[in-house]
Every structure is written in structure tokens, then in C-alpha cells.
Image (cartoon, rainbow, N blue to C red; front, side):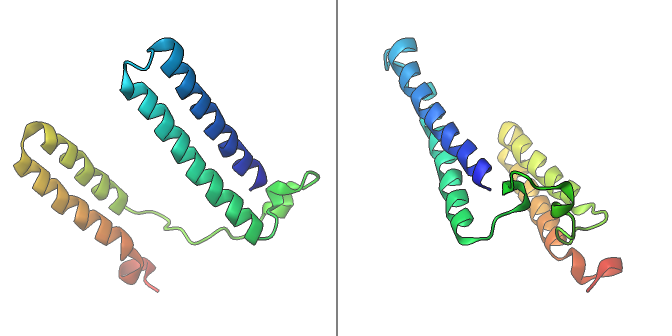
Length: 134
């Protein structure tokens, strides 16, 4: 996690410096959209870097942090994942209909919100019913 946090700290610095250079040399601070986008990207990288640094200080070292670590150190159970699921497809379809509704008509946006809600609810409660119920 140390290396990942370092990468995001470097990304924060790179995006902030790029925003200043872009503002000074490319647009002379006349065009605000690109500068704001670069500074917002630096802010997002900063939030992730702070979170990863905080988490790294409060947890044990990961196998990835060991310089002489072996591949076998990362073996084991990583979590519980659904073997297959159609719910992400339904949720993504709802998102696509929402974005299409913004272009076509607001009535379609409401249909997409409903479809997306059904997909997310089905995805969340997937392990409560059916073949993989707990």
C-alpha cells in the first residue's frame, strides 16, 4: 500500500504543477475549464493518497510491501464473489437509459432511474434468494 500511496502523492503533485503550467503558459489564465479540471484531478488524487496513507499507518504491511516477498504470500481467500450475476447488466442498462433520457427526453430518465434502482436492489440482495442464498 506504500507504493500505491506514493503513486497518488506523485499524481497530486504532477496534476497541480501541470495545472499551474497550463494556466500560465498555455492559456494565460483566460480559459478556466482546463485549469479547474487539472486542479480537481489533483484534489481527487490527494484524497486517495491521504486515505491510502492513513490506512497504511493503521494496518499491517501487505505482501506487496515486502521487497523480497514471494508470490505465495499473496495467496488465499480474497473475498466472496458471485460466480455469475445478471444484475450488474441491469444496473448498467438503467444507467444507459438515464443518459439517453438526458438527450431524448426527461420522461425516459425516470424510466432509467426505475430500471437502475431495480438492478441495484437485485444486485445488493442477490445472496438472499435463489441458488446462492446464505
